Image (cartoon, rainbow, N blue to C red; front, side, top):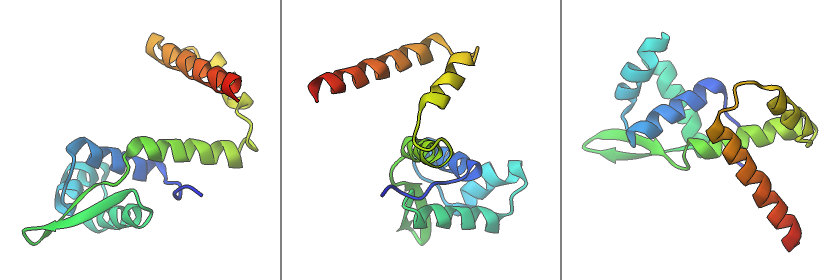
Length: 128
């Protein structure tokens, strides 16, 4: 089984830390928490929850804990999407693909990425 899913705010926090490679709780509270109106204790609680879920790791450096991503935000997004497909869509990706086809804002880069993924899926089916 994969890692536990995370919420939107936790994902934003994970992405914030990933962009900086490592950060202390105080740095995250100031740079991430304050603009969102989050208390330092709330930010630290979120960081510790992400650590307990396996998304963050910490190491002590000069008497201060530095947090960094254990797996990266991309894995958290994949886990969240997987959980959504399994729980909300009963394992079927067709409703998601239908939504994507109706969405007008698909960029050329996103379309190319989707085409590459479909080609990869087709290749796997041929190999099986």
